[in-house]
Amino acid sequence: LGNHLASLPVEPRVGLMLLWSRFLGLGDSVLSLAGAMVSKDVFVVPANPVAKAASLRQKRIFSQGVPSDQVAAMGVIEAFRSAGGGYGSRKSWCDNNFVSFSAMQIIGEVVGQLRR
Image (cartoon, rainbow, N blue to C red):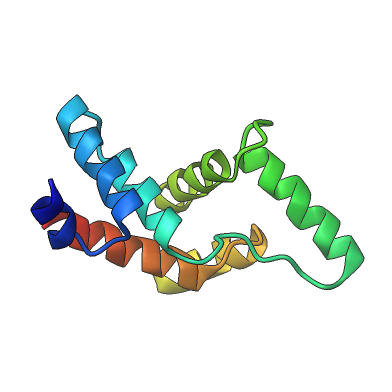
């Protein structure tokens, strides 16, 4: 078990989650969750009070009312993938939804590394 954990490019707690997910036959969504767990927060919280309130409403939409950062992150990842388009349109989507584009890029890189 230790050798497998050491070979993964993530923290041991995330690696253990990945090994258990593989053992239990869970899908690729666990890779995305692992990416979200090792990246910075996917949400941008503006300083402006009006924009901050809008960003919190958007986070609740992504989490489907469940008070969970992981559920919200998975909602963002699914919506980001569904948005499609190139660099510019994805960046614009992130800006419009108070999502960190750099965090989404990191998540994508981590998922790519974990698939190998």
